[in-house]
Length: 194
Image (cartoon, rainbow, N blue to C red; front, side, top):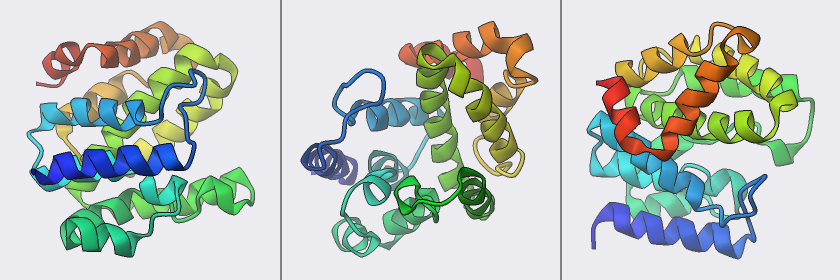
């Protein structure tokens, strides 16, 4: 069985056992990693990148440890997942700005492969938030733009397209919403970033 398929099965089981569902929709959480993987395919990812995309929220949101990721999927996948895992996760408490600042520094130090996966994660999350919580979307998109300003090593097509869509939430809401809705049609995203 391919590494990425093992990661898909592992992530599905971990998120399901944790009782995790997608905010706003109540769908099984695995729909989010699935969307991230589909977006990632436009960047010609390695098998390890695809595995990490499946696993990118497992350590943050379940009881799975990075060490277990390493044992099950190897040191490179473990490293990618570590780069994608918030150093100050939401469940650790504390002020949002303090957590976001720590995670900003962490993401800035991630390698190009991890930053590419993170771009896909941001695209999918933003689409869900813009469509379903416009009030929070204002704050989220400001944080996202700030994060993107330090994540310059990822896939250039994904990066540039997302940056063009984020000049200001109020002036570009329709553009942003359209971009992130396009995440539902992976061929549109692939065409946009080539």
